[in-house]
Every structure is written in structure tokens, then in C-alpha cells.
Image (cartoon, rainbow, N blue to C red; front, top):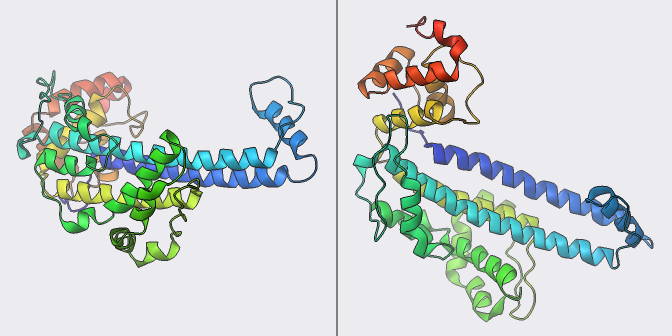
Length: 341
């Protein structure tokens, strides 16, 4: 059983969501570019008005939209700022989920530092969670949306981050500050952010992403203390790269502490225990097949044949529970459930 490149459910889900956000940012950029071209010319206000009617909830077109180019440009910039906010929020939720997975399925590996947060009660069954997600959120609440959040994640599990793990953190903080200034203040950079953008640690953080990323990534936005911050779709993509680097470093530190038993408890919950999972197929022929496909294809656990898989599920006390749950989920396959063993 090879756990070299194994990952948790939180890591798998986050990678999928990042791909979706990446696509959304790129498609939005294309859409706004096409819209700018569509409304060019003397009658752009009427063209945009007609599009309002065609695409919005109204039943008839708006006669005209004054200053159409300005409205499209302002909305496009606001859309990028909201994308940066979404990337930031999703990173925080993914990090909480990562810690929750570690505590749900590998609880014996950790002595979590929870502060005033209380541990959850016992799990109601072998395929259920205890409910660490709420406890983790409570423990990290003081750091939500500030620059201490990531360090709080390491501290909660008692992990000491290496210098390279946090190398991109100044860039993360830069985009977090931009988001706050645009969405919650007057949209200008302010002198503190201008000075921060010019600091040596920002330059070092950018270089830490590696030569390939530095070559393709855009320059950071030009900032003036009294002028609005202008973020482009390329900046949102750069922020995605930054949070991916920080998340992967945290996930790697956690993964190094994980043993085989937790992967089986994790697969028991997500492949069988949950009412719905998007990765679960609509039909399986054998009891062990959901566990096999989740472990190999989703969690990247390698070199595990079906006989060893079933043996370990029995050793960890999961086989009877997943067999009963399999019969509920796939009643037509019940007659075939043991045929391959």
C-alpha cells in the first residue's frame, strides 16, 4: 500500500473547486472582452440596453444604458475583486476542512490546541463523523480573514511550518489587503499597502513561486495611495497559484503524519456513509468497489489489491458497516456483492 502521493477528501475537493474558479475567472474575462467590443460605437448605450432586456429578468429591453463602456469596465473590475474574495474565502474553508479531515480520521495522531473550543462528541456510528468541522472553525475564529489564519492552522495541530511553507504568505496578505480595501473601504490602496507592495519580502515571496510561474505571472498592480486599486483577471489567477502553494505545503505537512488506518475510515465515510457524494457512481457491482475507486482514483492510495482491501476493512472494523450501507445504496447489486471474493 503506497501512501506517497495520497491525499485527503478536503485536498481532493479543493483541487476540483480551484479548477472551477480558474475557469470562471477566465470565462468572465472573455465575456467582458466580447461585451466591450459589442457595445463599441455610437449606439453602444442602446445595444447594452437591449442586452439588459435579453439577459436579465425583465420582459422587455431597456431603451438605453448611459455610459455603457464605463459601466462594463467598472463591473468587470468589481468582478475580479469578487473573484479574489471568493478565492480567499475558499482557501480558508479548504484549510478548515483539511484540519477537520486530519482530526476526524487520524485523531490519535494529534493533540490539537483548541483554546476555548470544545471537542465534538463521539461518532454515532463507524461510518459517521464526530463533527470536528465546527470545533476547528470555533478554534480558528479569532484568525478568520487576517494574516494569522494560516499560522493558526499549523498551531492547531501542533505542526511547526518550515520557512519554505510560508514563503508565499506575503503575496497572500497582499491580495487579502487589496480585497479589504476594494470591498470594505474606499477602493484606494492607502500608504500602508503601497509600502507593503514595495517591500523586500514581497519580492522574495513572488520569486518563491518558481521561475516558471514568475515568467508567466503578471506584475502586481501599480498602486498609488490615493488612486483606486485595479486588479485584472491575471491577478486573480496569480492569487489562485499563491493559495494553492500555501495549501499544498500545509497538506504535505499533515500527510507526513498520516497512517493507513485513517484512509480506510475516511473512505468508509465518504464512499458509503454520506447520503450523496459527487464522485460516487450511480451503480457498483461489489461491496468493495466504492472503496477501491475512491482510494485509488480520488485519494491516490496505490498498490492495494481487492483482497488486501477487504482484509484491512475487516481489521479496522468497517466491513460489516459498509456491507449494510452498500445494500441500502445499491439494492440491485446485493446478490453480486460477495461474488468476487
